[in-house]
Length: 185
Image (cartoon, rainbow, N blue to C red):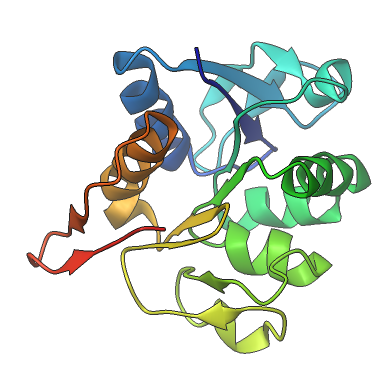
C-alpha cells in the first residue's frame, strides 16, 4: 500500500490539506498527517485546530511514497523556515519519492530553498516571480519527474486526483475544469 505524509505547519491552508487527505484515503492510500511543530496539535490558517497523527520529528527517518505540502501564507512560510522540513523533503526528493506542494508551498518552500532543481511547477498568485530555481507553468496542476504541484485551493481536487493517479500507476491524461488535456508527469 502506498503511504503519503501530509505536512501540517501552523497556519496551513486547511482545505488544501483536507481535500487531499480525503481523496487519497477514499482511494485506499495510507495518509499520515505530520505536525511540523512541537506537538501534534496544529492550528490552521483560519484558526481551526487539528491534531496530526504524529510530529515530523517522530517520523524523520520514515520514507513515504509522497510528501504533500499544503500552502497558506503562514503555513508555507513556517514550512520554508523549518530546517527539519527542508531536510525531510530533500531526503525524499533524493530518493525519487513524490514531492507535492500546492498553492504557495512550491514557491516558498521548494523555490525558496533551492529544491525545485529546474523542474516545471505551478504556484498561486505571482509568487513565481521571486523564484529563480524552477520553470513556472500557468496550469491547474503541473508534473515534472517526481514533482507534482497544484496552483491553489481552487484546484485542490485536480491536485489530489493527479497525485492519486500517479501513486496508483494510472498514466491516463488529466482533463482540467476547462476541458484542457495535459499529462501531469
